[in-house]
Image (tube, rainbow, N blue to C red; front, top):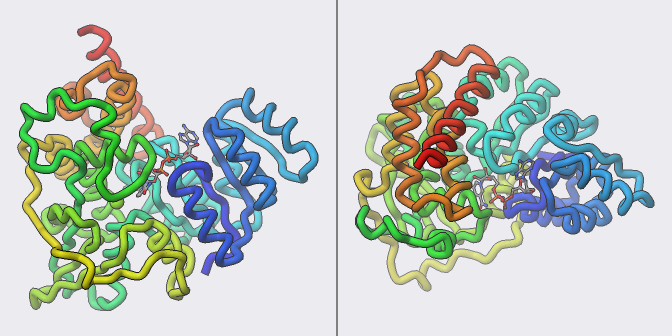
Amino acid sequence: MTENISILGSTGSIGTQTLRVCELLNIKVSALTANSNIDLLEEQVRKFRPALAVMGTEEKANELKLRISDTDTKVSFGLDGLCEAAAIDGADTVLTAVVGMIGLKPTLTAISAKKNIALANKETLVAGGSLVMKSAEENGVKIYPVDSEHSAIFQCLQGCPDRKALKRLILTASGGPFFGRSSEELKNVTVEQALKHPNWSMGAKITIDSASMMNKGLEIIEAKWLFDVPVDRIDVVVHRESIVHSMIEYTDNSVIAQMGVPDMKIPIQYALTYPERIECDVPQLDLTKLSSLTFFEPDYDTFKCLRACRKAIETGKTAPVLVNGANEEAVRLFLDRKISFTDIGDLIFESMSAVPLKEITSLQDILDADIAARNFVKSSVSSV
Ligand code: NAD
Ligand code: MG
C-alpha cells in the first residue's frame, strides 16, 4: 500500500480526487504539480505541505515561491520540475494525472527512480507503451491502472492466476454525448455540446476524447500495454449507464464484470491500496434503483477516432504516437474553435498516412513522431 506519494497534475480532476483519497487514508504527499492554477496549488501546498511544488512556467513558479515563502516547500517549474517531482526522495508511488504526452518523460523518470506508478495519464502509454512497460519490468516496479476500465479489468484479473484461461477483454464505453448520431449530424456540434459528458465530470481534453470516442481508442491501446493482450482480443461495448466499468471473458465463456457507481475515487484508491481494499468515500451501488443496464455495438464508421486507434496499434511502429499527437493538437484546435468536431478524426487519419512510420527504439523516436504529427495538423489547418 502507498504510504508516500508524488502527484503529477494535482490540480486537475484526477489530481484533486486523489488528494481527497490521500487525506482519508493518511497518505503523505511529497510533491504536487500544476500547469497554471496557482491559487489551487497554493491551497494544496498549505494543506499537504509537500517538499516540492511545481508550476508549468518559471514566471508562475516565481509567483508561487513568493506566495508560499512562509512554508518549507521548494518550488520548481516545467518539464524538469515534473521529472524532479517524479523522482523525489521518500515517495514510493507517483500518480500520473497530467494531460497528454508531456507525462511520458516524467513517467520514465519515476520508473528509473524505482517508484511504483498509479497511471491515469493514458497518453503516455499510448505513445510510449513499449518503453514504459520494458523499463517497469527492468526496474521491478508496478504500474497500477487508475483509468476506470483498466482498473476494472485489473480487479477482474485478480481471480485469474492462469492467464492462459483469459480469452478477451471487454472495455465498456459510455458512448458520450453523441451516441446514436450520424457523421452528418456530428459535423456541426459545438464545443459546449461536446463538453457535456452524460456520466463523468472530467478535464476538457478527455471529455472531448469521450465525445469523439478517441478516449476508447486510446484505452484499447492502453489495455494492450497494461495487460499484454493482443488487440484482436480487446473488444468495446457501449454501455450508457457507466455502471459496469469493464469485463473479462475466460475460455469457458464465463464473463467477470466489475461494477460500481461512476466515481473515480474507487479506481484511484484501489491503485493506491492494492492488494488491500479499504472503505471508500463513494456511494454504494443500489442495483434496485437502476431501471436497466444496456449494451450496444460501437459505431466504428461514425466514430472515426475509435477506428484510427485500432488501425494504429495494428500497424505498430510510431503509428500510435502519430494518432495521439495529432489528436492532442486537433482537440486543442477544436477547443479554440479553429476546426470542426469531425475534422479531429480526419486529421488523425491524414497524419497517419502523411508522416512516415518508424520503429521505436528510443524516447527520441517517440518525441520526433509526436512533433511531426502535431506539425502536420498545425500546417494542414493553417493552410486551409
Ligand atoms: P485535467 O485537465 O482536469 O487536469 C490535468 C492536470 O495536469 C492539471 O493539474 C494541470 O495543471 C496539469 N497539466 C495539464 N497540462 C500540463 C502541462 N503541459 N504540463 C504540466 N502539467 C499539466 O485532466 P484530468 O481529467 O484530471 O485527466 C488527467 C489524465 O487522466 C488524462 O490523461 C486523462 O486521460 C486521464 N483520465 C482522467 C479521468 C477523469 O475522470 N478525469 C479518467 C480516466 C483517465
Ligand atoms: Mg476510462
